[in-house]
Image 1 (cartoon, rainbow, N blue to C red):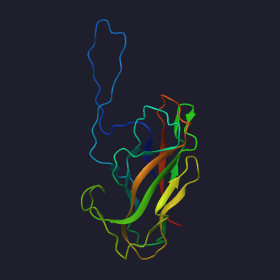
Image 2: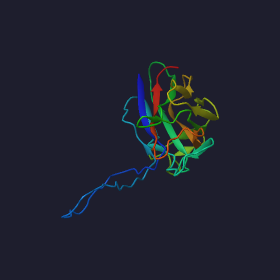
Image 3: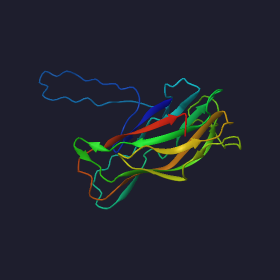
Image 4: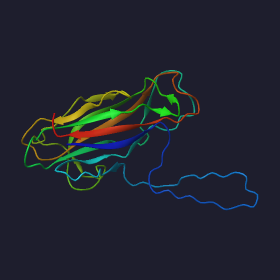
Length: 215
């Protein structure tokens, strides 16, 4: 059994939520353009999984802003919101293996035929507990893990390379714990080498979280 969820990864500004578009017809109209207008109330989404082992929450997107200049030297772009992000794994299985692993795979960051060669995504990570049903950013949803939370994060600081094979970011080899475990991500950065970005381009990619029922 394997479940996947995708988070958008953007090197340009983004707006989440319902889009509204409109305009006024003009007799001599020679050009037109629609601008999306939206609003979003959460930075996380609930993946559609319904099994006893499932991804309960995952980030909707990582946004690294809209730079007006091409960086001549290597630069780390901070995630725009500055907020901590979470992936929450829920394990309610009663039979079979109790192992699981969460992997992350980052696609190439592209804009048309242009690729952001050599860029990486990095973040600090720590294990947390999760309670309730509200989004992870809701006060009280993320808690200090107890001794019963047996999962481990791969490292306190993790780096993903575009186009590379999926890597394990959190796993649980225990056969005893049942419940929800969160990986908290902070200090999220897009690291871009100098001189690889093309002026006027808006790069984007895809970050795939995959939950597997075996290690």
